[in-house]
Length: 367
Ligand SMILES: *Cc1c(COP(=O)(O)O)cnc(C)c1O
Image (cartoon, rainbow, N blue to C red; front, side):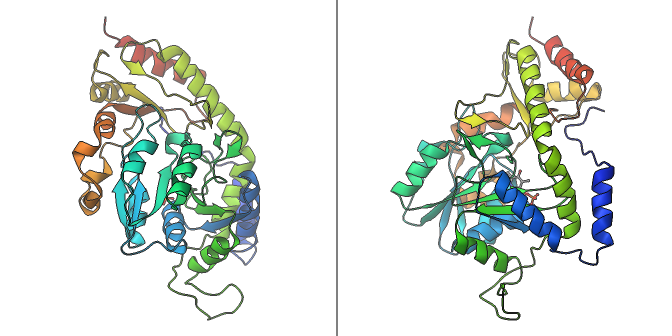
């Protein structure tokens, strides 16, 4: 089976984990601190705060920014559900805006239309590894005095112009889940240049307890700590991240070279402001192609090729999130959920596997 994502654990990760297990400090110890330090440097940000997963990072970011009941946060309906769930977890209301037809990221004009007197923040999502247009979102956030928070869970290593994702929003959130571009099994990271947010995030992940005075609490917090076991894995993976990204980009380039001329297949774009890290390589299957999107997915599977639909359900159709908008406001999202299909692009693909994928998709071009 050609998998949609692949995890490769080498001797280096195993040794690093064993060292932690032998060290007597296995939770939020020196390896977590080292990972925070290296992560902050990697995204050119002053502070990085490790947490237990990406959802915890988002919940922490919104909560320490003071977002809660009665507040609205504008976000994308075309993302993993954790993006919007985190807004509900903070006690606020997700309000959805429509997306751009080619990057699949939030459309700035659509976002601006959804701003109300209750809006506190814009939660942008750098979907599939492609940066949002931070210049435009910063302008809108500043004009309306809103916070700009980034769900960068799929975009470690990506850039907007020359700036790494993670350094552009007021607070950025990453996931180190097993399938993400940088992974630790389960894990999350918050990055910010704001010292107060950094300090609050450190308390929030540890029951709201003061960093310096034990059993002194600033408010409600959670247990969102990362383990040193997970941090040790991420530190080893981080060493290889640049070469993994390069491989993803080469694979994407090769796929696009061969697939972009097929009638009815639209290959991913990389805007001039973006350095894309291809967490996903996502095609649009248009009616002019020889098979429907779902038929193509079945054909690929019959040939031992995994593919996936990220995401088939717009979040305004999810019952507990449906206060956030109505179908008619989202013509682009409505269309895109019917058309997208993500195919393998991970760094461990062989040339012959890429060629097999290309052959099958080429085979069903409408004659
Ligand atoms: C993975 C992901 C999350 C959640 O991260 P977890 O570590 O699984 O909690 C949130 N948002 C997006 C866009 C993601 O891809």
